[in-house]
Image 1: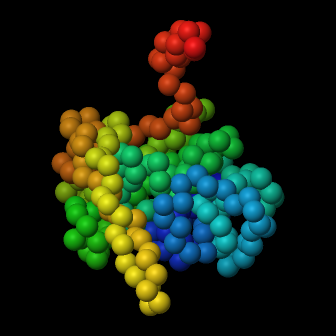
Image 2 (image 1 turned 30 degrees about the horizontal axis):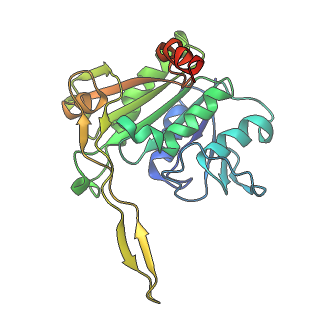
Length: 254
């Protein structure tokens, strides 16, 4: 089994190093990750310039591009042998609900699925923004992720599906189990934050993500808040199939 590992926190992030080390228990590992933090890059591909790929070691490559660039280049030209599975993470914070629309970590897994490979995105969940500096219990993440990967190897995912896994930042013995969940969603994002650069020009920070709106029983938000590992299946086919018939009638009346 050969694993392709990526993320959006960058090739030097602690999470990706711990993930790669764990995966060596299951097979061969090669890391293709951005040369710097590319959080929020979503599914963007770099199309306006060539992309530098630096070999850091025999099985680690630093890519001057997005997470999607990393997986795309690895699978379509850089690696001599195609990997068997893409694992993206361990993301340094949650990817819950509509976070998946922006997450580079989830995007790397999606790109792997687009290219025909089984794929899993994994993140660690802090209780609040205030806990951002709290020590991450990555061992808990790898403990449960290994179980999930072993199951996926024996029971392959559907061709259009990836798994989005979120693990609470708790010791293993405090995790209550694993739950299959749907994505919740947030209220709209907070307002942009204006600042001034040293020369007085106005600039903006993107505002914080909005608070939870749909976070009830069955959602990923609810699962992790109650001490469960959340496993959400995400499909790459974005078509709203149950609206096609109604839209077809609407289009005929234009």
